[in-house]
Length: 286
Ligand SMILES: Nc1ncnc2c1ncn2[C@@H]1O[C@H](COP(=O)(O)OP(=O)(O)OP(=O)(O)O)[C@@H](O)[C@H]1O
Ligand SMILES: [Mg+2]
Image 1 (cartoon, rainbow, N blue to C red):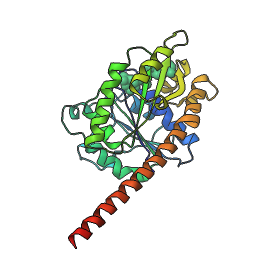
Image 2 (image 1 turned 90 degrees about the vertical axis):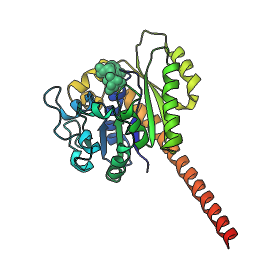
Image 3 (image 1 turned 90 degrees about the horizontal axis):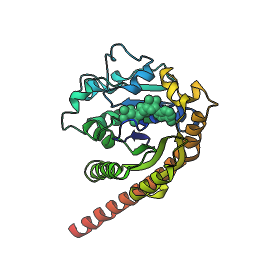
Image 4 (image 1 turned 135 degrees about the horizontal axis):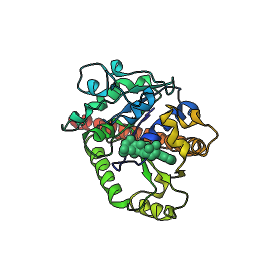
């Protein structure tokens, strides 16, 4: 099962962290894959880390993904439990991650994720608002990319930049990386922008890759992290909870299942092609 999902958009305030943490909590509740999830926080600002550890300020975690990436500790030793949900573990961020962003190393997280993925049903990677090395590490390590995008105009140039980076990583380092989908977030009920945003996104992405669910602005979604809770734990009956819940149950999990099937078929076809080529080579050598 390929369950490593990078949540990416270099636009700031796009709903990445909100989606990453509510997706993690939703998968624990609504996916039947398994009940364990690891969230890796690759953003030096550590918003997901603060929410999951229940600390809005104070010292950053003593052991973090930075120590794991610089190989000072093992991946398992970097992991901590969370107050957010006992089934969700965290590889926390630390402001020192910023120093890694100045390097060219973009394949370290992949090795960490390979070591950890057998132990978790899902791994969700939250990323910073740029396309630098930290985001690239997430894209090299992931099986799928999820792109939350705010319901504001002028999405085309930014989305083209993002897909160019994804394509480059697919071409050079992670052949099997697939787009899981684009999730429109932060829709203000009063703006008539949605049609334009959909049209713009349609210029860059296949229509089937844009989720139908729209996550509207919802005060409970904003309040929940400050209470160190997922939207379902904070107020399971609110609009925000039902939007994220419906998206996960009706779209995310179905899309994931479809892509998994496709991935398996493509891998089998590639393996068969390789075996046939090797057999032919042997025959010519004999
Ligand atoms: N659906 C929503 N309704 C109301 N507020 C929201 C919603 N989604 C996100 N927010 C709020 O919008 C702000 C930005 O969201 P979030 O932190 O998830 O974006 P981000 O893409 O992770 O930002 P950054 O790029 O800075 O990491 C946060 O204050 C968050 O609580
Ligand atoms: Mg964020």
